[in-house]
Amino acid sequence: MHSELVDTLRCLSVHEESWLVVAADETDGRHIMRGLLGCPVCHARYPIEHGIADFSGGARVPVALDTGSVPPGEAAAVKLAAMLDLTDPSGYVILVGEWARLGAALREIVPVMALAVNPHPDAIIGGGVSGLTTLDRIPVAASSARGIAFAPPGATDEQPLELSAALGAVRPGGRVVAGIDVTATDDVAVVARDGEHWVATRTSGAPMIRLVRGRA
Ligand SMILES: [Zn+2]
Image 1 (cartoon, protein in one colour):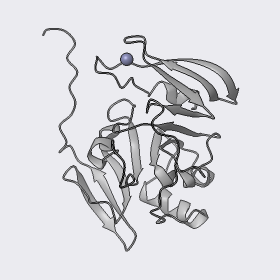
Image 2 (image 1 turned 90 degrees about the vertical axis):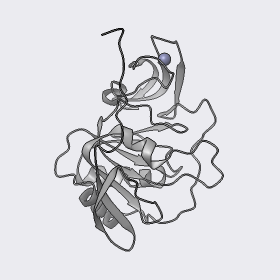
Image 3 (image 1 turned 90 degrees about the horizontal axis):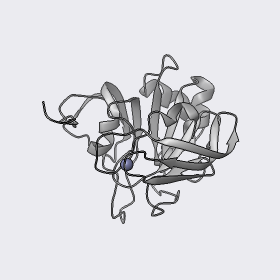
């Protein structure tokens, strides 16, 4: 977990949105490879091991997904950079599942920060690619990511990360990329499609989560 992305992480518990504090036991450059994230509101703890923060309560370790639709390599990374409209390195992008395998190659093209969510075990974590595991939500500030490459969960997944829930992390107008095996939802506007992938922007169709801080 890159120290810059720690500010973007949010506690998953039901209370007012809270950032997390981090205690690092082992670092590699600016990446926290082993440590502990803690919520100052509810005292929930999220351990970091091998650079990957665990927001799944230990339920999800990086596992292989068998969709096989994303061949890793430079050409695939170039295509991903184009689909995500990465013309500059600002902000961060979310790479779900096997898209995370392209994180390191993507950063060779555009040095954008990448957050690998439920990363494929082959994904290289570090060097600007952060990792976390989670269940049905991505524990980041609402509308904070500039784009997302989404991959479907496994068929036997009991608390799958659905596209509509994942989109809450993406800013309105941000890019959304997925394989054609993923059904586009009402909260995206598809702008391009080929035999393998579709590219969309997040629309404001999804209800925004409102945080109420006391009485108005
Ligand atoms: Zn909390």
